[in-house]
Image (cartoon, rainbow, N blue to C red; front, side, top):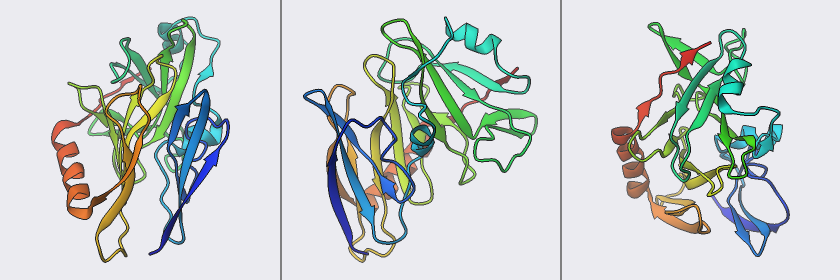
Length: 234
């Protein structure tokens, strides 16, 4: 499969470039958000963060005064969990909205053996300026997975059949960001995987290629350190 990289400069919110068929990376450079798209000629990959861009969720200021206020206003059957997400000092609130149609893209709760997990989640945080915002949303259940993270580091892990993704919060707590993103190319005879990575949220992501063996190891290592998050139900 042939691939091409197209650089697009503009004021874009996180996830706006992560629409179906595109994988996006943003970085703040001189106050301008730069998005680097990886366009697929076939078998395009989309990020779990795509839903944030589609709904304009990322960094949106809410009417709530606190995260507890968010919980008070949840609908019956909604799932929620307070967690510590990497990149920011304060706890965040992860909400898995209930939907009567389990096949709906935004059906957030999956109950297995009486335990509630999240398959589509909206992450609320208290930004550094005190505003309660929706930092982002993730669709994690499309491949049978549920929302999971490393309880020690606070890094969020999601991956589809063809992607490896990790997330943390921005330095001000107001935006969910890709920490790492890699996608395989199942028709690439050389077994290379394109993506980008960064260690901290104060630096720009670095675009790079890794081998298929390295990619598979990342996925296996993620399964070793991450755990499925169990949600409370309103």
